[in-house]
Length: 257
Image 1 (cartoon, rainbow, N blue to C red):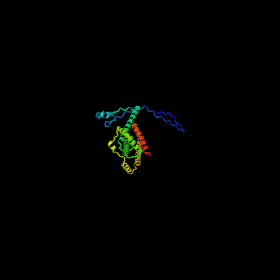
Image 2: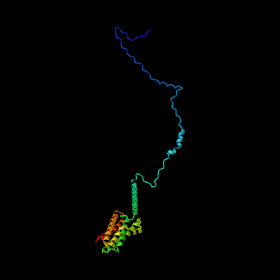
Image 3: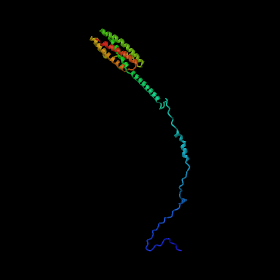
Image 4: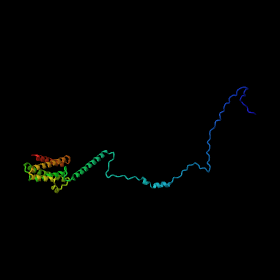
């Protein structure tokens, strides 16, 4: 039996009706396809966990104590305070500064003690200048004629000898070596004796001695003043100040007509 057509037959002369598109059948739920089985000659992508190689690990553990050994901490002979203790560090700084000042004072004292005899402005230089005053006045004691000069010579010898002995004692106590033999033979200048001898021959000894001694006393006073200005030791300053007063007195006496 032929299939029946439900569509109406088109009338002659009529346009054909549009064909309604038919939607494709809705697909059903998709089922997962099984994974293809690998061929026997094809390597399967399977990760295998192999046991770790224990030999290198055991070798590393054998020398691990070398790497793990901690360096020994350096211990200081003097325990230092912690950084947070500011007061302790201030005390340490003050003590360090005090020690540095002591060292500098000792070095200064050694340098002063090692000064050569005859240097002006030093203890040994002052002692030598005093020796020259004593020596020249001793030479003139039997030659000067003026009463003023006779009085000056006597005063100069007594006061200068006393000052020299006191200064030598102080210098010796503070490590300054004084050679008494060399001091007794000391001469500031050989020309002084020549000038005085010539003045005695020319009968102008008093005026020449007065001029020579004024020059010696003036230089002696200047040396005492320079040493008094720079010294800081109380005992030394007291001795130098007393000698300076004596030098000013001698200068006033020798400068008088």
